[in-house]
Amino acid sequence: MTSSQEIATPTDEAVKAPSSVAGWWARHRSSILAVATIAVVALIARFAFLDHKSEDYADFYRRWYLFIEDNGGYGALRHQFSNYNVPYLYLLATTVWLKIPPLVAVKLIPIAFDVLLGWYAYRITRLRYPTGRIPLAAALVVVLLPTVVLNSSMWGQCDSGYAALAIGGLYHLMRGRSWTACALFGAAFAFKLQAVFLFPVLLLMVLRGRLAWPCLLAVPGMYLLLDVPALLLGAGPGWLLSVYLDQASLLHGEFIATAPNAFQYLTTTSQGLQTLGVVLTGVSVLGLAGAAAVRRPDLTHLQLVLAAAVSALLVPFLLPNMHERYFYLADVLTVIAAFWLPRKLWFAPVLTQFASLFAYIPFLLLPYRLRDLTGNPDVVDGSGFAVPAPGPGWLASAIRLGPSPREVLGKLFEPVISYQVLATAVLIALLGTIAVAAREFRARQDAPHG
Image (cartoon, rainbow, N blue to C red; front, side, top):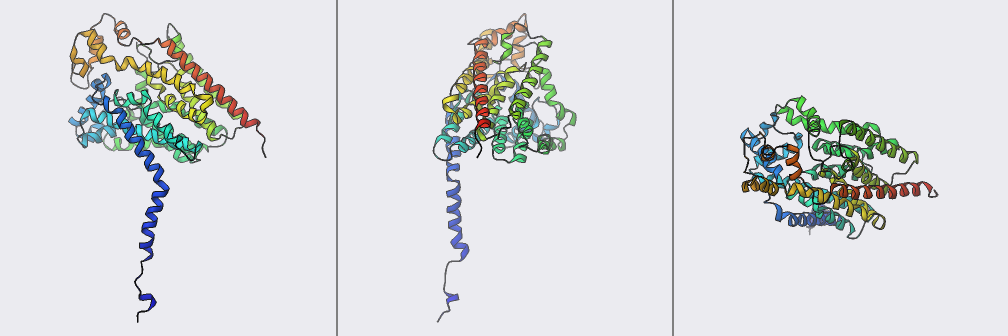
């Protein structure tokens, strides 16, 4: 007779395995389905634009891709061939290594970040609506915003890269994960300088004692850490540390103002006025952060969302030499804020998207305007003014055809709707969002504590 110990029974591991898999699926099912839905919807919405070759693709991204391909893949990063910081170039070099065609590669990188951006929009909105479909709706609105779709799939820009990382940092701030949040802000800053538009939120957190200042060391720390692979490949530390200074110097030349911000109301943009804009921006940020901190708010999830939306609108609206794409964070954060307070802030994303989209259009039409200006049909596919990389591209070649560079630029970037009208739309969105945020901070302060 067999003892009870010898009777064949399932082991504990065999019993636990199915239940653990089922438990894991039960815990993560909604998140997995949300990511899958966001990814599928994002890809479908972008498919029609994937074969478009923008001027930036022809003049810059394609040349960078070919330079990497011709100079040993990752080893090409020891050369200074781009005015972008190295995190984007790592990704571009990876697509070269994977032998992804250049046009597909340039579009694939930002589209992947579009999905990450939608995911963090989902996670932030889920803090407001723990159940139901509203968080997924918010994520889908974000990935279907016209400027978000066109930025990656038609233009080939990668603003969703820094935006996804910065908004991820905001999410982790809301969850109290200070080091993770600051590391993500640092990664966003390493990706693109425009991540600083959300840094006032970090300032507010520090002033309120909700963020220990040593955590801020993770911001430059992550920037420097992401430089290490390029240094090991032979890149010069001077270039890596000065890339944003070089970018800023490019913004001070003779150019047409295309951002829907305060400088559209001015007939001239002298160096003195530009300096005044920088000072005014700094004073405004410090003033608003200080005024909010003096009220000693709890910095609830809603207050952080509102602070982020105000910051993303205010900073590019007041700073000089802004591009139209620099309201990308505002495009996204006004949507998230509107989902938190739909009755009070529904207008903010509508006005912001209106201004951003119509500011985009001259750039999206640029190849066709170049064709009309020069009579060269080949510029539409980026081959009309081909010169060896990394020399000037076909936009620069077209500008040289005219008697005055500014006159040619004026024709190429002529707005569909007046930039002053677009700037007014952003101003209304900004003032309205500030008013709603001020009421929310005041209401939280005046609420009885029990």
